[in-house]
Amino acid sequence: MVIPLLAYFDPSTGSLLLQALVGGFGGVVVLGRYLWMQIIRGNRTPAAVTGLAQPPSPTRA
Image (tube, helix red, strand yellow):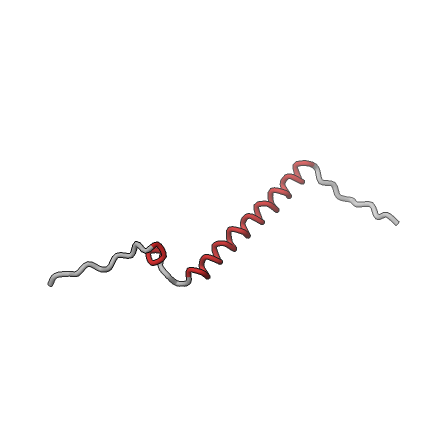
């Protein structure tokens, strides 16, 4: 027995769905990379990561 499908995707609807899927996948990849870098880096500051941290200058009293 064949059940007829009562749905139709025209080209613009298919394009919109494809764009949403690709964009969602890209968002998940970017979010995953961001979270992975947060785990790898830990709680270090960006200056500590790049090595550009400068020691505090001595103050004269």
